[in-house]
Length: 91
Image (cartoon, rainbow, N blue to C red; front, side, top):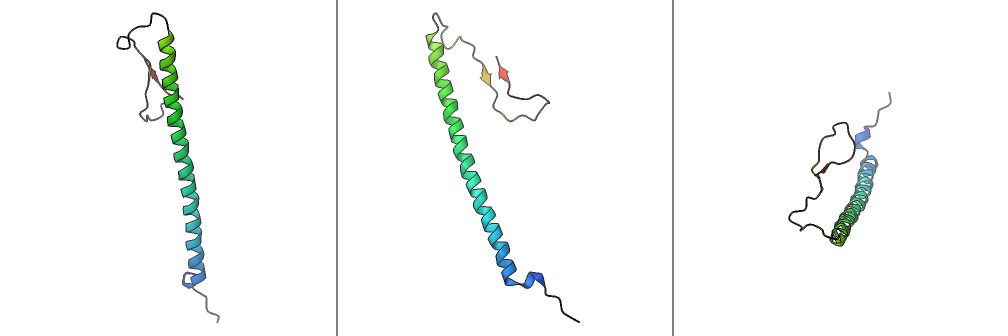
């Protein structure tokens, strides 16, 4: 009878599994870095939008003082999906 080799006991197989894990770790790190960069870009654009909005509001003749003006606000808290898409604007 021939003996079967225990696949778990082969060192090269274990090293291959470690290599695969390290490659996945490197890919995930690159994904994370790209996602962080994208979030920073989105945050910067949101700030630019707010600055541009304020500049436009100041150009309106006879505009109300800032304290009395009601502004739309975007709800940024994570909400479970309710069947609708998009974001809510509260007035």
